[in-house]
Image (tube, rainbow, N blue to C red; front, top):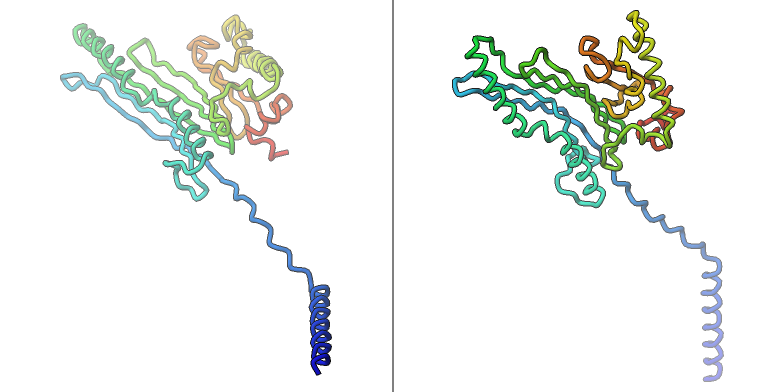
Amino acid sequence: MTTLIAMLMSLLLTACSAATMADVKSAAPPADLPPAEAAVEEKISYTVELQTWEDTVYAKDGTRLVSSSFQIPVLTACREDGTAITEPETEKETQALEAAAVFNERFSVWTSSEELDRLSEGAAEDLAWRQEAGYEWLGYALELSCNVYQTGQLVSISGLYYSDTGGAHPNTYLMGWNFDLESGAFFEPELLSEGSALQETVGAELARQAQARAAENGLAPEDFFWSDYENILADWGSYAVSFDESGMRVAFSPYELAAYAAGAQEFHLSYDWLRPYLSQHGRELLGLETEE
């Protein structure tokens, strides 16, 4: 009997083992595990707001000495939900705040009181002299107006500065600032190309446009502009360069390229004209890569 029971137990264990092996072999493979979630790209955007700063300085008798009104661009770094970044939580946010600080620092001089105080001292002396001589006093006036153009990587500011400080006539100055949001730095326009092709071809095109403008006024270019106008135009990157929806503007304030009576001189080059002379980085910076 004992031997019989042992044989039955042995057969039972063998059958269970075989059944288990069969179940394992025939079982469906486990479902693929879900892929690890891809790292969410941190999206940062920038906004530029024009803020007006106004100030007026008066003499002791209440006479207005100097009034100023400046339109100042202010750059703000924002998270994807549109909230401004004030306390960075990541390295990328830190870099974004640093870029905004570099941009805003460039325009902080306009809001500084030092220049206004210095000018006010001169205005007070001018006022005293005019009152003693019996001349009319209108006060000094300073104004800055700006336009903003922005792509995903570029902020371009064109500015017009007006200054009336008691001279024979007011003066106007055309300005331009260009900022690379990715590198967090202002840049000169020649950095949009490799080598000197852009610098040279733009200079030649500006000379051609200048000659045509002089001809429209019935004058030789040396008479309409300064006699060395071609040399001035060849150095176009040192003057007021800015960008907008249609292309690049190169502007010269009165006296820079021609006499005051000729006024400011502005030249425009379309993106279609510029494209062959731009590097890949230049096209990306100007937002032209997506248009191809």
